[in-house]
Length: 174
Image (tube, rainbow, N blue to C red; front, side, top):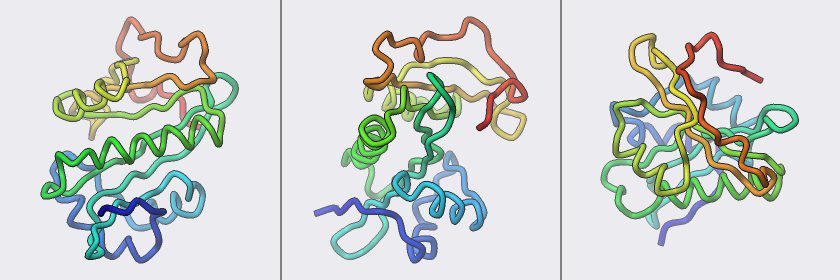
C-alpha cells in the first residue's frame, strides 16, 4: 500500500532516483528547502511499503485577487512506479489543498511542449493549455502553461486561453 505524506528533510537524501527522467527538472538543495519551509502543505511524497520514495509533488500558492492560485512546480514519479495513478493522486491532493484550504481560483503548471504523455495526463485531469511560453526551458524549448479552474472561479475566467504566445519575460512572478 502506497502512503502519501508530507515531504520531509530526510526525503531530500532519498529521492534522487525519482529525478532520473530527462524531462524532470532537478533543482539545487536550497530550492527544495525553500519550498519545504514556505509551502509545506504543497510538498508531498508517495512512499512504498518498504520506504522507497516512489514520487513527489512540490508546489506553492501565489498571486493576488483572481490570480490567487496553486502552482505545481514539479510532479514526478520514478519510472518503475508509473501507471499506478500516483501522479493523479498527488495532483488531486495539491488541487484539493489549493481549493479548500487556500481558496485559490485555479491551479497552474508548466510542461515541455514536447512532453506529450504528460500533456495528455494533465488534460485527462481537466487541465487546458492557457498559453504557450516561447523558449521557456533553458531558452530552447517552448513550455505550455496549463490551468485547471477551481471552485472559486465560478465563471472559469482563469482558463480562457490567450490568443498569442508569450515570452518568459512577460510572465508574472509573485
